[in-house]
Amino acid sequence: MWIYGRNAVLEAMRDAQVERVAVARGVQPGILKELRRAAAAADVPLDEVPRIQLDQVLKTTQHQGVAALLPEVRTVGIDAVFDRARERGEEVLVVLLDHLTDPRNVGAIIRSAEALGAHGVVMEERRSAPLTAVVVKAAAGATAHVPLVVVTNLPRTIEELKERGVWVYGADAAATSAPPDIDWRRPVALVIGSEGDGMRRLVRERCDELVAIPLVGKVGSLNAGVAAGILLYAIGVGRAG
Image (cartoon, rainbow, N blue to C red):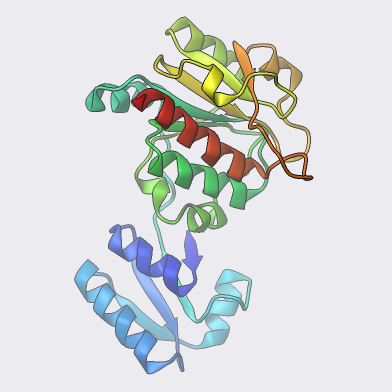
């Protein structure tokens, strides 16, 4: 898959994710020099191509004249999440995405999950944004560093997690519990619902408890990606306390 934009491509090269780089002829010499240096350090071929070729391949003109070819995103089974937690000597922390269709939100949540210590992200095959280049770009390299699990039935996966001793908490703006009210030091799955409708009924019913972020402003809700980041940070604080 292709990603584009100078910063996204440089980040991917630093993380050794890139197979090749394409740069439009005519980009600023300083930018070209920086990209050549990064490509040499990553041992990645760099080709200069006509800008229209990038427009056609990427189906956009908003690429800053820089693109990189990455391998397809690798997904794993749920056991990999438990293996990651065991390797770190930590209680499991996994994020479940219920019908999130905005790829930028999905990428942002994957980025927050990796940065804030989650051991994996789970999503449904048919009810989530696919793991496209938009997700990879929004995740800023995190897709290569956190286990990503794609399942056919999220409610069934929740039941399996509960059978393995995981407590399931759903993010819901109408919940009466706030993050400080919950003991996060146990194995935890955090469910983030869709941008418009929140969690589906079958998912909500399987949660052990619902949790809300207390808001003091006039806006009544938060973007799903922002909410996930705040809750993951709160979980980390709760585990450290």
